[in-house]
Length: 96
Image 1 (tube, rainbow, N blue to C red):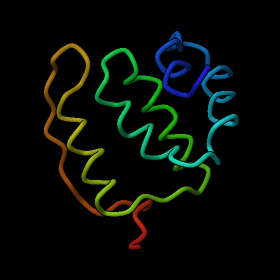
Image 2: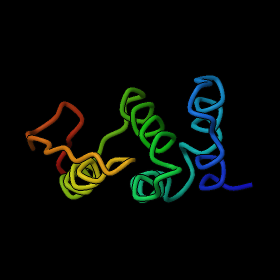
Image 3: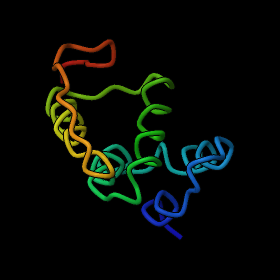
C-alpha cells in the first residue's frame, strides 16, 4: 500500500488511523507535495487535509508556492461548495 491509497481509504473518522498514516510517511521524499496534490481528489480531500494539518502542527513548513497551491485547492471543496480564502501570511510560512 502507498500513501495515496491510504489517504483515499481513510474513513474520515479515526484520528488514530490518519495519525498512523502520517507517522509512516511524514519523513518520506515527496510527502508534502503528495498531500497537496491529493487535495484535488474528492475521496482523498479529508485525509490529505488532516495530514497537512498534522504536518504543520508538527513544525513542518510550507513555502509561498505551496501555500498558494493549498489555498487554490480550497476553492474546490468536496461536493462543489465554493469558498474564497483570504490569502494572508500564515504562521507556517517560511521563505525558502
